[in-house]
Length: 115
Length: 115
Image 1 (cartoon, rainbow over the protein chains, first blue to last red):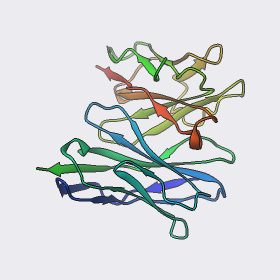
Image 2: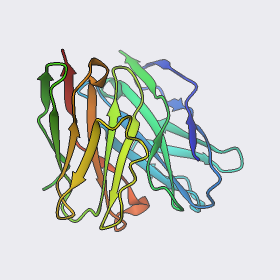
Image 3: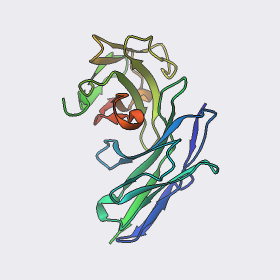
């Protein structure tokens, strides 16, 4: 079974600052993927970034990067130069590539960017 | 289509009535998922279809919930004898092994309110 833990229910950050959203996971699978999604108030789930368990380099997508520390089972999302439009719920998720293929989500972190 | 399409986007129904929610996945995606999100909560897995394999129904909360996928494409989630606790956003998603990480992409959801 997989489990995702997001320990920050809410975060407040000043515009243009960098922000780190924490995510730890637990799995017995050797091969797995880690994902971050953004959910604005409109409700849609927007895929941000993916990291494979065998990828040695941290994933980056524009202002988003994933700080992957496999030994610590940590997959933190870093947003550089935050913008007002980054205010949203952020969910960390994982799926194993052996057995069950469903995506397991954390409880989310509500990020608020202040002007 | 370009993205996952869901209908209706909003549905208000009376307690005890049956409802059907429809999902049209991204063209070519062989996997389809249904998730449920109650207000302010994380995502709860309901069911997963992969090609012609038997679906993973392990997340369906009761026998009032069922889903089918016709022709390996469109899926319908049916809730019989709706209860007020069924009020939630129902999110459909799809994925393909041809996409890095087998990333799951979500539709905009069907907001169900049971009165």
